[in-house]
Image 1 (tube, rainbow, N blue to C red):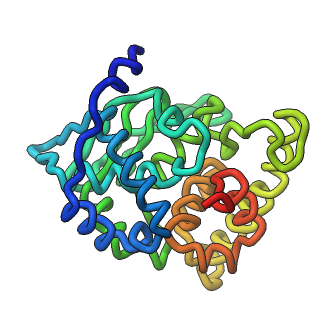
Image 2 (image 1 turned 30 degrees about the vertical axis):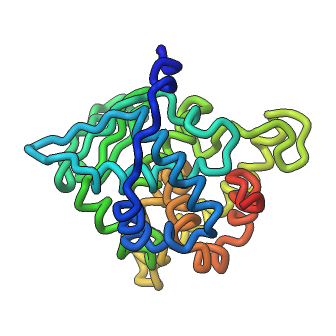
Length: 263
């Protein structure tokens, strides 16, 4: 509500030394073409203008923290029509110093309630804030080999949720994949993503149960197709070479959606 009021504020200035330090720490940002870096910087400033950061457990939000999160958060929407409108369902970003334990409750098919604890590095809440572990955000500068990036993961969920429940299929633009209707576009999307997810899940199961070689991609992607989408987005943006080798069909799908060909 009243987001237009926030847009009236002047963009915050990002000091050159702070920007260069961010590009150096997160090499996948520093490797972007110069024109993309310029757009990334502008969009990062818009993100910093519109979002509110909150530290927990005494954690202090410094310029380094806010800029690192902003620059990685806007990378997926850099070429998406609408820009920051993809993230207009929330304002707050909660940063913990490290991973946190979240209490979960699920009801199985027999209507039996199960409660358990889950250690999480981040969480994106539908129409709510995004939670991140600074320890994991910082580690994203050295975990690109495994395609890991907690910021991109959680903001990929936000993109997915724009269509409603997180189900691995974000809202698709008119004419996506040459389809005339949203229903046909969604079917085309899932025709690529669903088999890729099922194949990844099978490989993960074979590794866990029978000692087969585990996939290099984070096995959390085997939990559900929505988690596979988020995990795949991480690798797509931070380790394109390995992702292209093992997921060529998903790479082409993501290229069309995220506008990589427009870069």
